[in-house]
Image (cartoon, rainbow, N blue to C red; front, side, top):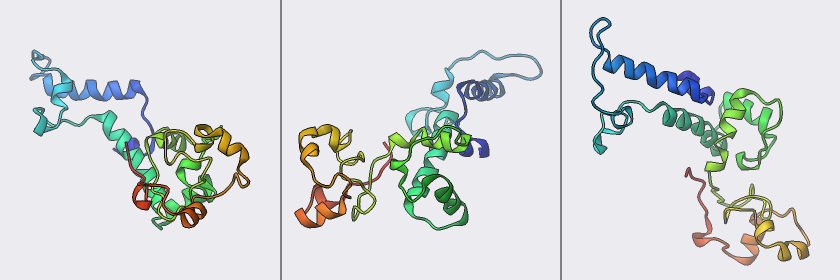
Length: 179
């Protein structure tokens, strides 16, 4: 579990974990093997969906890594998160990060799931109006290139237009959530 929370496990390791779990469940006493009556995927389903609730290592790996992203963006204040923010983020949010060549395996692993997140704009101080993906699936500069080309301040944050023009989003807040 610790390794899954720190690194994105490659497919070979995932297959090996599934193989070991299946061997434990299906192997009889000694070297005698049992007949596989149900696929492993069915056993790994949650109990409420007809499975036995065995751990799906792929999902667990993804969830544990995404948890880091959520904690980094939450503003939670502890020494580990502060160190990661200072080393990798440089005052930017997670969505503004680019994976740099030579970054640690840990950082590359969690940044592989960054695109599965959305924004929680709140007051809009962290959101770059034209460059961040916050309203649609693409930055607004790509969705509205003609408007972007005549815009005077291309580096503006969402906070300024929201306070001057009112709500740009329904309810004034677009949530940062896991998809």
